[in-house]
Length: 433
Ligand code: SAJ
Image 1 (cartoon, rainbow, N blue to C red):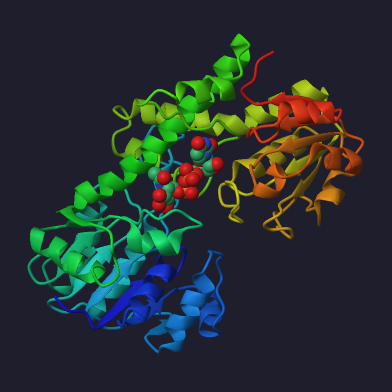
Image 2 (spheres, rainbow, N blue to C red):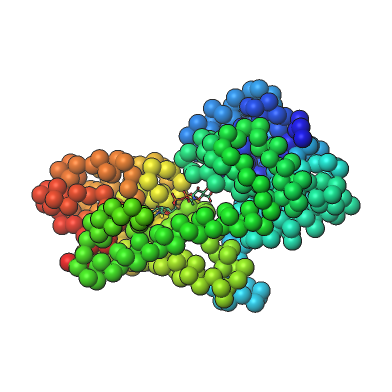
């Protein structure tokens, strides 16, 4: 199949790089977003999200004339839906109390907006991470309101995005891509579209398998992080240094234990496993427990800070790092922010320093303009993200900036001997005494 023009609905972390990459590969692309601010920002040649290399790519795509930005779809050969699928707590849906459910309203309204433009022979691809069966049970019936039949009159497929924030542009092109069609012809049409720029393998399967693949990937990572966090708790109980134990265990050729930490953040791994729990709560028991273990980590970090400091009332805590993982500026679903809020609830006076987003503007969390202002007057330093600037901080330099001599290290970035030699007492997550 040949594609001259495509419409990408949703210009976020996935839609914008995808739209721009198609455009720089010679396809005419209409990038659609319902948010007027996003539309205007892009029309002015600016971008609203941070990702290395994205600004240059978007500007090249706009300059080529192949990428245009609009607030509604128009007729095209293919439509790609890349809108968010957040999750919300259960309501009266009959799910066990507290089981978050996928919120499909953006997927539904994007599919509805395509209906008036859908023509025989078109291809529609859903990329948003979704509960299994969404493509066949939710998206197909909406598109069929056009009078056309999915798989017969138009092609319909699911293709998960698997790119790592911070490396999106490279991984978009190089990663293997899974395309699941509602029938083989739809998977083939999806293959033909992504072949335009994907250099990795393109593997064809069914739509529901492709949905499941994506959820299994992120769930596996979540469960693996949960076991690392559980090992850290056991190590604290048993008087073991979990970091040393993990390093030794990982010498085994078939073992790769991940890193414990203050919790699992970001908009994917902390969300996607719930889509499997939602699909079969009575079956997805391990998955639910792993989610709960990881979600408890921020409270455990606060408990460690309390162990070090005693009553937190009025104590000044330098929260070092707010991003959801090292060396990114993305604060979405960040466990570090939850730690900051829990500290405040316990009466602490929190000052946060995020080197990649100095003016972070998280409501209620005061931002230090630099490390010096964060450290000055603090009673304790809490390292919550293993950012490179923190890794490179020399303990003598830190000691010169603050009277505080207590450090809580939740990400194993402090060399214990060096920090202790500089006069600090170190409390390390996952290290028992
Ligand atoms: N984390 C740990 N310990 C570890 C590894 C990670 O606590 O050993 C934490 C991080 O600090 C962070 C969270 O887990 O808070 C998630 O970070 P991540 O780097 O594991 O993953 P994401 O969310 O940035 O990207 C993931 C990737 N999925 C997998 O690696 C299976 C990416 O390929 C997906 O495209 C992305 O989710 C997504 O959009 O679904």
